[in-house]
Length: 576
Ligand code: PEP
Ligand code: MG
Image (cartoon, rainbow, N blue to C red; front, side, top):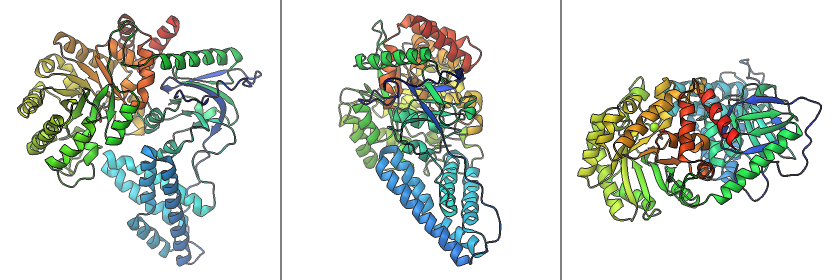
């Protein structure tokens, strides 16, 4: 929850009817951020019924026209909403509008209508076939499959004269309860209306959680029992505790009120560089992937950049970008950070982020394929060009540019990358630790690099052999798990023993309490989406290095992610 000037929590609006007759019910999930909110629940509407495969009684032309009109109107609506939303939300909505406008999909719909299908079935079947094809490709394309379902449902609802699926409208602010949210819904949430989000599906790195974090919405995902929350019931959402209380009593509400007031006060007092209560410095850096996000990082007080995802700039490129083109784009970013650290990740191609000029499209299992540094080493000229462009752009700015390699799995690869970077005149070169082998061998890797940066998203995915993009295994994607924390501990120790800095640049660093644990495990800097910096800064300011180490010890000795998180929440609540 952002410390907005107007109340967006429902907490400070005076008296709240706490519905004294019904006993409070506590439900647990994974909190996103530290916010607290209270309000009546509203549920996402029931999904629209699946159109039946039946022969139409209308003329084929008439069915085709119904489908065309609905597709065009849906594209228009998405585009208009995209223009209003702007930013990431706007981009997502524009991408959905393009799906509704897609000529090959329209041709498929028309041919199904010509064969006698109803308009709604023709749309449903054509989008479904395309969705299956994309899902079969896996990775980034596979992730777009869910977006097609989203567009298809909107078009079908329009044809059938049903309300548009999505966030309900209300004349007073509410807590939105859903199984999960489609990307378009999360992107478009009206922050003056939606006090908080509660979902029964999804993990801490689900699309919903990432967008909620980016937009500063109080959210708890993966809430067991959320299906039973009824519209109109009063719910208290406490993201810091990962706790949803249905029918909270007065005492619970006033305790939450004071905690939220303390949090907002802590945020407004905690300014400047990240540091612990004892003065121990923990630089707070930003994860960026574009010039726009770099500007946001500056606006949100980032002390520099801990992860510049350069592959994001070239996702649509057919051929490797020229040195001059790269140099120009990097320079624009570097110039925003004079005398600040900017850690650039060289192209991380593969799996969910294929690059046409680096990725082998025929791999059966791209997440385990020739990706990241492996792909760059196989196309060394691309890596050399990028290092040349980075060195030249660095020379044209006052940023302290460092480079790091993704998907490093051996000490040999680490050595190879540092040598190459030094050869190109970049003095500080490190590796991302996101493959378990690299963490296990951290004592051998550390002496070969200038720094290490732990990518907790992939480290978690590979530790659990659970695809980070796949909803059905989202429950494993939790960096609080001691299996992940113990790997991080190995890296922290190796870093300390070799005087090699250890950053964190996965989503884990954006979780304020986990950020404290990570510092306790040896992290020397934290990099995150810019919107999370204020809450992380405030939380760090409350804890000493001894506290952080004590909390880390509790977390690593727990048996599961849930018990690790709970042990730390309990320990911090006891000391509050
Ligand atoms: C990570 O894996 O944690 C990471 C920061 O890299 P990305 O999310 O870009 O794969
Ligand atoms: Mg990664």
